[in-house]
Length: 160
Image 1 (cartoon, rainbow, N blue to C red):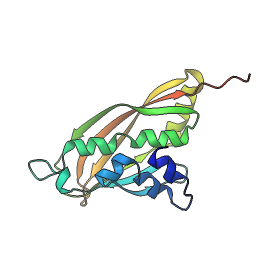
Image 2: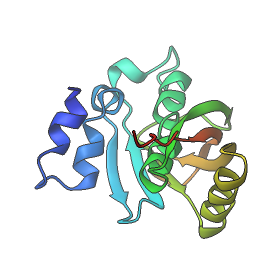
Image 3: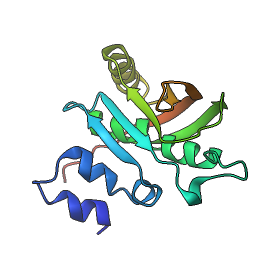
Image 4: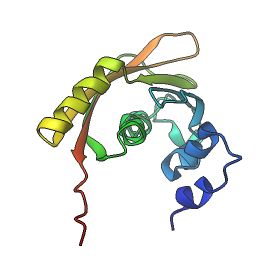
């Protein structure tokens, strides 16, 4: 049993703390600041640490990519429990150097949910793109992210 699944059994931990135990987040120091009860949005931050700095002393782009990678897929996995989800592709446009703690908010709107639900009902699968941004402490745009999440309806088990 994985660490996250084991920790999930402890119902006293709020969703924010539980998600911070996701191994890549744990080792990068990602802090989950808010998760909507219906998992339609998540705000998280990424600290600048000695091991996340590039040769210029700013945030290494790979850390931004790694922190952004699973977030939309995790939210979709919680909203669409009847689907298998993972990140299919990701594009990051680096605007400015990240000189300190960065934060981002991923939102899944009602329109997104309807479009995904309809596609899963009709086609059984979809690649859906989410866009979100990373900002520094002064709300300066650091990076724009386009994250494509693949969702496929789980096959139903036959009654025997």
